[in-house]
Length: 413
Image 1 (tube, rainbow, N blue to C red):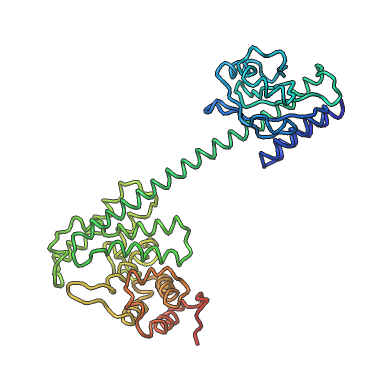
Image 2: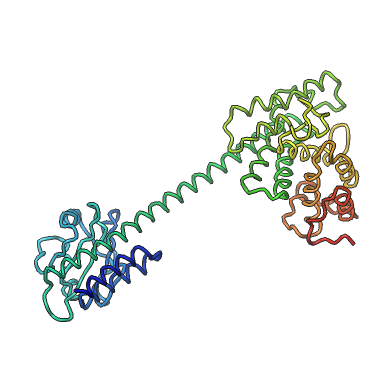
């Protein structure tokens, strides 16, 4: 008796502590068989969807014992009503299950079948052979079997609950990923619609989004933050949808009146984006303040350094960099040295110095072969990225704004 109660305690501890379900079930079966000196046995898990019990642990039942056993509705109902009371095979011929598997149970010398029922739910069954002593099962044996079977049933119940939670979590993850993809595709489509008004800057919003993404990544932001920065870049010019096409496409420097209308687009963009629920709350602020400068000479509000939202500072740099490195109706793209010198000269005036450094680091990493994603090559073109002396130019620019110290693969010799 002491041995049996010790096995019962061990079974409870095993189920409570084991993380590996299969090991838990096998150990529980061995404890049950060993505690009462039972020659052979097995544990099956029931699937209501398949109306079938599948053996998940087995010892000594023979190679011919079926690993899957069908269970009709009447069998399941009777098993649920029976609870965890052991059923003697020799006295249960009335149930369809015992009629169908009579020969299999007889050949395996199974004497007891114990339904595993927890809170009225059929979870499986324990199959037990004869005792090594040859004695019949007494009431004491049956109580031990019931108690240990309940432990096994709890383990299966926990496993099924965990599997269901994992399944739902996976479904939710896939749904979330699909929603994110849909959101990103919608943002890109919106960006394309913004740029469609200006034949000279086609792709501008997408490029700004990608430059913003790169800068945020170089700053060490999290994946979600980087993604949010990219969205802010994609949508920064949404206010231009309300600006007359002739102003946007003007092949000359626009006059003061036209400039005034164009300069309304940040505030208009903010009003367009504000009512929309974005996963990234700073998107409307980036649209409104991406033309502000650290020295207070920007628009629409003439904010100074710390008054400007940080995401707007990033978009401002990305927007300006794209304007410098693409052809416009009244000017050609500027060569790398001219661009780098301009950005370096305006670091601390128009642009945050650490952001200029982050942009330069990204270009330098790619030019030096540390980053093999070729993002700048796709955005700027191979010829631009293979400009003679590009790496020394970047080193010099970074030195001038104090941002080269984090480049690990490039010496300053």
